[in-house]
Image (cartoon, rainbow, N blue to C red):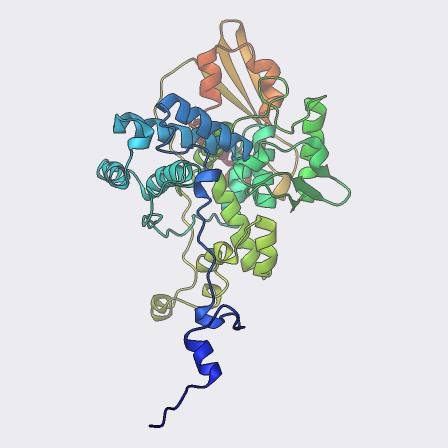
Length: 444
């Protein structure tokens, strides 16, 4: 009987002995490192092991947001969202579940909350519970879809009207810098005098959105206004100082100044301070500026954010004529001048307007106007008003800065001063001066 024995190397492969040398396994047979979860070690609050109360939970989350240098507004918004969520939950923070988060967000949507507001709530819950507590309450939830609206853009003529309608020197400069450099509201209110470089015609924007510095353009036409404001500011550190020492004006102050200037200028578009930034980018694009350079001026992190201005720019539409105009044989639509109508308001006193013809002819012809307001201390006069007819049928009113009337306005009653600073007063003054000017010019 013949017996065939296996080869030695075959025996070693199948049943390696204690003294047999083998190669280390490779490829898919190689040993894998064990998966170690370090998430619980870095969590700010180890839920549900620690089980803190709501107050302790909010305190530790607020501390973590602070030391991670979240914006102050973000800290306030996140804390407010967490307080509302825990109050609605009516249970300790460690008892929250993913289904609770979805029901809470559904309640917001049913209540009429916008997609942006729902996104803020989702970000707050994700940051607190998922990032800082090692939970997965928002797993699978995405940022809500937002409406893709085109920005509101003012024309060049409308921007000039807004700047001319701003009654005070401070308002003219605030709105002018926002348009000239494409600044945000939070950036213009925090401008300091040391950020103004008159030699290089630049503004340094410190810690803008995303905590990034950048340079903005300082227009030559605003240098004289800046010099006048500097003399009035004295030793103030900020360009637009607030009522308290060492503080700047609030964002709401800029919004009110823009709303008042838009109302005085008679612009019907829903223009906000951010509209000036949109107009700045759109006008640069229409003038042929490279979009990459516009992105750097605006401080956008992504080019996709800047590309939206290509949808409202008239670089292509300027050379394309509407087919209706081609059929009707018409060019640009004629501009119709509308007489300003002064809205009715509560009377706070009497006002008299006086016009005097100034020496001059042609474009320099016009009238000097003064307004006399009756107060408890007697008649108070507001002068320095110039009325001219830029072209036939277009009567313009040029007012001095509101600071020039400050020594007179301090003697008025609060109701009277509030009325003078309102858009209704300027509409009424425009209507009265236009009628008086036309009557004076006809007699002469």
